[in-house]
Image (cartoon, rainbow, N blue to C red; front, side):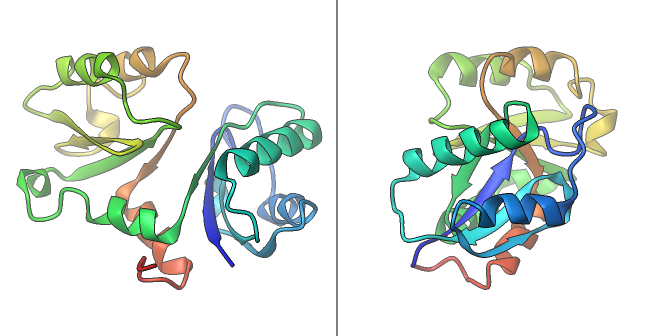
Length: 182
């Protein structure tokens, strides 16, 4: 049975508060199995018979909007995909950056998005892209980056996205009980 990780946007930020027990129940209401949550930022691990990723995403987004009263962009990844993301950039120049964040997208980053992000690059901030993710590397704490909140938000405006620290991605992968193979 396929296992997925749902990375949800807008959970426990901007006045939208939801307890993880409630979020787990919302996923169980959709007949998903083995549902568990991880930290309070909207990460849900579940199993289902369905392999229709777009259908699953649409069903989750509709159900959450109906129950929570606001749009919750949803990004689904398998444990194997999380493993690829967790390995992205290891053993390269990206290792010299202290912070590594991953922005999850529904589709691969367009050339215009890649160009806009690369134009923001500096001695402290750099980007690279893989599949449906944009990786942001910064020297020091992300909150100290001049891109934090301002220009980065502008570049992503209008696109459904959600961002996670690479440490969170790796911990999520570990919680799936998978090495990512398969």
